[in-house]
Length: 481
Image: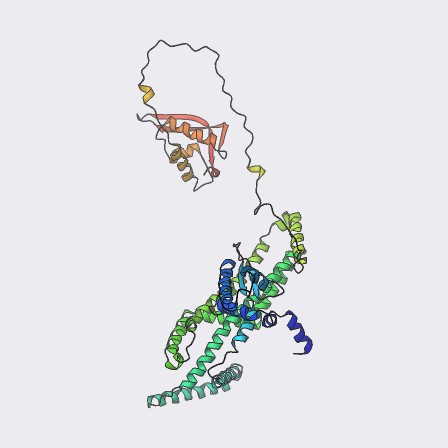
């Protein structure tokens, strides 16, 4: 706490910058109401801007129209800038809408300001009991002599047995109202402090994830060397005191029995008249669910780190498309170089939000158009009478039904020949249906008609006669579906 350290903190620490900001009351009150009080971990930009606009409107009605003249979006961008560091602006995976979250220094500053509120009384007994219990747990948990530990357990057993006997004799010791209030205040303060700890743990994992991405962007050596370095950092975080404590807390909290016991204890405590006299925050009744939600956010941050490593391992283009990877690395390195000093004008422009992929091998080969040859003989009017019944006895083949049969057959295989298709779905309309299949094959670019190979198809017509046709090999591909 020397002069140079404090001077540096005053210039760089976001919490200190918030405390000395001109609009600190407005900023701290809004962020406390929006994030800390309801335990909201993240919020989309439109919703947060709408809430801030309503909040500013209410302040202007009290303070005058000249108060806080900027728009809500401008305030949010200013609070999320590197020069402020009070909000974290980011884009969740798979979402193109900006989201905001509190930074750990901001939450610590707001909690510090909230501690200025006058408490009903300052309880010392509960904190002394907590200190005494922690010291006893440390001393007993580090005792290596089995005889000493057994002697201590025997002593505690005798005390428990004496207490049981005293209760059986009718002497039931009870906490007085002051002791109940003291312990409840200590519990509420500790429970709310855990939420701040989760945000700081998440920030540490996020810092590691960012460092990993930067290391991958600038690394030029072998994969094994980089992975060894990254996993060493990951193990260092998991093996640190904070990482072990977080893991133990998470395992304890994820126990269904512990959650049920905690809920029952909260209901019992909040039903006490001494606690009700304190007008406690009813959100404490579900504080363990808030812990779970905050812990899941930290776990998702760790999952994104693992996903980043998996993508790096699956990146086959490291060797196959080295030139492309070098260009991407150059872009990433250039982005890192200008991160702290972004250009004032446009940094990069994209014509379209996504590239258009057009693979040359998917284009069909050129097929010369079929030219029909007509006989030059003149048309002669016939003089023989014919029955006109055949003109009214026409057959309609439903090509939609045939396409559905092709799709159904291709659900279990990549391709099927016309002969196998006819075996699976026998012809119902004879030669007309067979011609319709050939028509579908000529219209489908993914189908193949090979005149060099032949195939035989057979069916039974409406009179019960067996018919056989010899056709070129026709194969329907999965692309036809």
